[in-house]
Every structure is written in structure tokens, then in C-alpha cells.
Length: 325
Ligand SMILES: N[C@@H](CCC[C@H](N)C(=O)O)C(=O)O
Image (cartoon, rainbow, N blue to C red; front, top):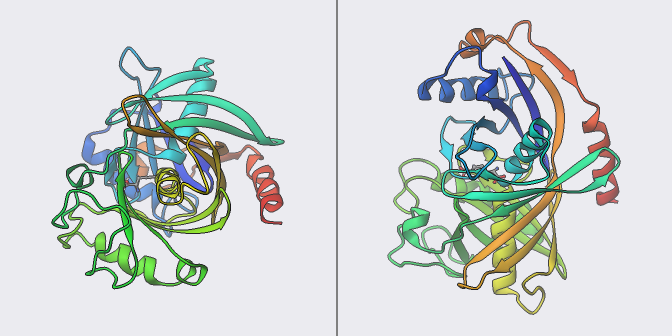
């Protein structure tokens, strides 16, 4: 069974095309395979943040992406991942500008200019956007939360909750809080499977404004934990940056988003019916082409797997070093 090891901003995944399966997978087997392959300790070549499962899409699209988190839970969307799936389908079907079917929307994707030599980039639509508690799976006694307190979580921090369409809880913080333990403490509680605020969990991000139109986003993801980056979180954070700091960034203006794994650019749009959507532009790096035995992998046995590196990771790291200078 073939797979690709990929990443967007260091948020890493295995792309698994249903057409490359040795035999069909049940839903339970897909979840179990993901947990085994992505395990950071005993998984495949250092594991991953999840599996991006690629299937044929319905007639208005050129493919379908399902997002399986490292813990086996399924998410409605993956911003870093859809850029890598866009590249995979672009190269498989010789496309440049097309739509990918996701759980709640068919999303436009297109190839973007390379970020540097050997660092390919794609532009992905992030939508739909909702602030409604029902769409967020949020129970706080009110329908929306925009720059408001949740006393049970923090006496001081102010949060915004937005679904893009997966759920995100976002707070703007200073550098000290950004780098501290509070994010992990709050996110671990909200993803414990028992709390009443987000019973289905939520991706939690702390955002620090670095400069005009430049932010740093650190994310603890539902179903994964801390990741190098979360594309939907960076998009949601960009939207809240525009809404709460509109003097710094207007609609249609490019925002530079830095994260522990690299960077992306985002643009916040508002369409004629008043709904927001974002463009998420960033790398789509193929680290290696992989071959494993599917039956053995389901048992967590990766003996004899092949790992054929593309050389792109070295070029990505060289690019990132120029960003961090
Ligand atoms: N890292 C992804 C988001 C993956 C799903 C998320 N953990 C969730 O459960 O909603 C991204 O780049 O958006």
C-alpha cells in the first residue's frame, strides 16, 4: 500500500488514496490504521498528526478529502492538509484550479507561486464560517462568543469561538502567555471528553500580534495535541485579527501568519451575503513516498516499509531559516 508523507507548515500527515489500498478498509479499520501509523512513539517513521484519506469526489469536484486525527477522530476540515491534497490531486490529474469535496463544503484550491526553490505552495479556500454555538458544539449559555470571557477557563483571558467549519477557540495574548502553559492547560481540559463547554472538543489557539498584519499562532489541536501549525486555526485567527483589530488589517489585505513550523499567508474575504471566508496560502511539501504492508500496518507492524525521500524537506528547512532570520 502506497502513501505520501507530507506537511503544510510542519503540520504533518500521511496521504492515503483509497485507490492505493491493498483491500478495502472499514471505518473502524481506517481509525485503527490512523492511530497505529500516526503514533509518535511506535508509529510509521516518527508518526504524524493524522491521515488525509483521498477518495473520488462527487461530480462537481476532482477529489474528496477526509481528515482523520491522530487519535482516530474525524474532523470536518484541515487547512494545512487540503493544500497537500490539492498538490497530490493536481499532480495526479494534471489540474491547477479545481474543487475538493470536504465534509461540509466543496472548496476551491489552486496552485500558487513557489515560496522558494523546491517549496511548492497552494492556495485553499477556508469556509464555511460560523459563530453559532450549535455549529461549534459549544455550551456557554449564549449563542456567540466574540472577545468574551469564559470564567471557568480563565478570569482574565478573552476568547472568540468560530467554526471554519471545524471548531476553534481563540485568545489574543502577550508573548509571555503565548509561550506559557496556559494554552495546554485550557485545551487539555476542553478536549478531555468530559467537560460541558465543548463536549466534542475544540482546537484552541493563542495569538500574539507581532506587527501590523503579522501574527504568531500557537495551537493545541483537538484529536492531536500541540502541532507545529494548524491551517484552519491560522485562518480563524486571521479572521478574528481582522474583526478585533480592523485598524491594523482590512478585508482583502494579506496577513503573514508565523507558527512553530513555519509560516502561511492568509486573506480575509466577505462575500455579498455577508459571510466571511478566508484564503490560506502556504507550502505543500512532499517529504517521502512510502510503501507499507496494509495488513501488517493494521497490527502496528511496519517492518520492511520503504521510505523514499524527495529532498523537499531540506529545501523547506532552508526556506524557513530565511523566515526566522
Ligand atoms: N491541523 C488541521 C486541523 C485538523 C483537524 C482538527 N484537529 C480538528 O479536530 O478539528 C488544519 O490544518 O486545519
